Image (cartoon, rainbow, N blue to C red; front, side):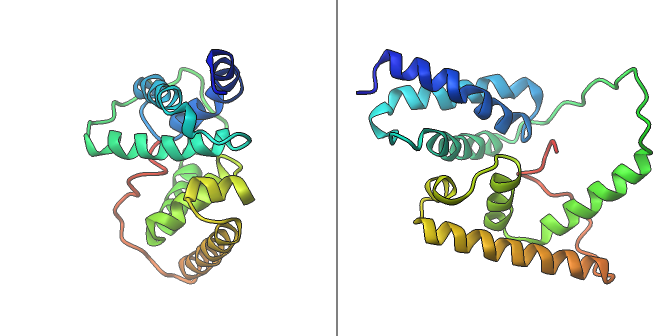
Length: 175
């Protein structure tokens, strides 16, 4: 049964992962609130959280919470500039960031989501299937197709292909 002790364990084990999920996608001021929204939903719908697949269920819920948050279209504040200089040439970072964003921009939102869940959150196999709401084979196939389209888009970019200059809005907002 999913009782108080179950929730305490869920919180201890997965709250950090949910927090990091949002930290990569939204302004720092929103991370705590969105993380709390997911955990409140987990408590409220604790009977729906599958045993052994808690984290994928939380990621799927986080995706819905994030979508709702983005619909509000609140501006993202600019962060403070760090005091310490970095040895990396900012121009190189900007070029690399623009290349990655440009390639991600030509992919479908679903492909971007699958690739970022895999790369950033480390989801594979059954966990990715739960988040996507498909079977294991479907998740493996979706990841394989997304990777193939990513390789194709990257290859086209390297061969001189220039996708639209508009920034990617969504999964890679805060990098």
